[in-house]
Image (cartoon, rainbow, N blue to C red; front, side, top):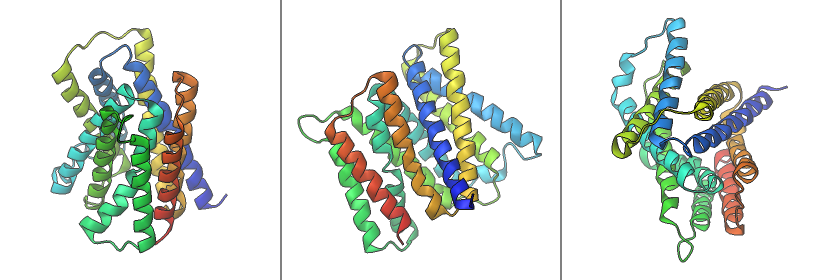
Amino acid sequence: MTDNQRGALYMTASMAGFAVEDVFVKAAAQTLPLGQVLLTIGLAGMLIFSAMAARQGEALLPAAFYSRPMLIRCGFEVTGRLFYGLAITLTALSTTSAILQATPLVVVAGAALVFGERVSPQRWLAVLVGFVGVLVILRPGDDFSTLSLLAVVGLLGFAGRDLATRAAPKGLSNRQLGALGFAMLAVAGAILLAVNGGAILPTGTGLLHLAGGTLFGMLGYHALTYAMRTGDVGAVTPFRYTRLVFAMALAIALFGERPDLATWIGAGLVVASGIVALTRK
């Protein structure tokens, strides 16, 4: 296999891991407060990544964590984690996952507006088509649900995190960034739990859901890291959209969701435009 083929395989495995993580979070939140779910998974992931970093002799709280770009990154990460968690809990997983696929399009637009990166007319057109796809999914009008905006705020948070990462100091390992990312998930959970309260002792099933969310979240993160370091970014990144395939299949099989025609059309527009935006210069 070529490096690009291995990278594509890692990326596909990563997206499968994240899709399964979403299922465990949604399932856990049916018996436990969402804030408790996010806080528990965040703390578990943070501790495991921190232990891995310590084993390699890496600083657990490097000075780079306190730089302005990293603080901005953390703010966006908390926003994305918090609102995406609310979205997958309160709305259909298939719809939320479809909206999330617009994140790379926002990153492309943000890179042009914030960092002055050159974006060709073809890529701008793809970005606009992708946003139209999001509107098709949201369906402003009689069928519009304000809860769908939770996913939109979540994707803006993740896009802001990705943009801030570009300005972050170099030299931080994947283990350090993983620990920080899960720490921000814990912060999001703590905020939600402080507002809503209601923490309870999880049952055996609840503990399995929490363990599954932690395990597949970390596996997804590791596979994503390998993917981005193995193949060319332009060749590997479009395979991010396989997450939608896994999410749709799991939502239909496990939660009985039946995405309507508008969701399928909107998702198709978002994915197609995203592939064009990521592969054209």
